Length: 97
Image (cartoon, rainbow, N blue to C red; front, side, top):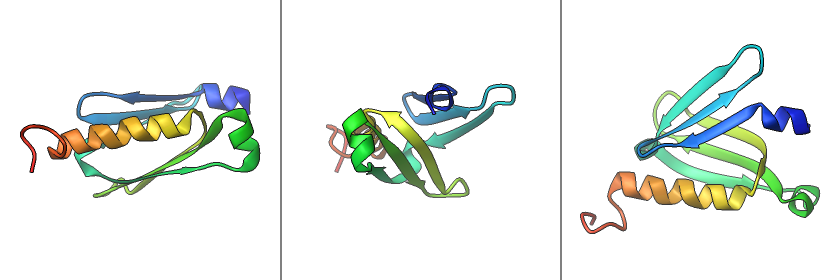
C-alpha cells in the first residue's frame, strides 16, 4: 500500500488540478478548477489513526468523478482544492459576487 501511494502525484496549479498515477505506464488526468463541484473526504477509523483518507472530486463535464485513495492529510488537501475552486469561480475575492 505504501508503494502504491508513492506512485500517485497530485498537483494543484493556478487553474487546474493534475493527477498522475502509475509506475511503468503513467496516466495523467487534469481537471479545470472552475469545473469542480464537490470535494468529499472519506476516512475509516484506521485511516484516521494513520492520518490518511480517500478524496473524491466531482466535476462538471466529461471527466466526472475522480477518486484518490489513501492520501496523507486529505482534509487539508480538500480545503486547498475548495479554496482554489472558489477563486476560479470568483467567490470570496474582491472581484466576486
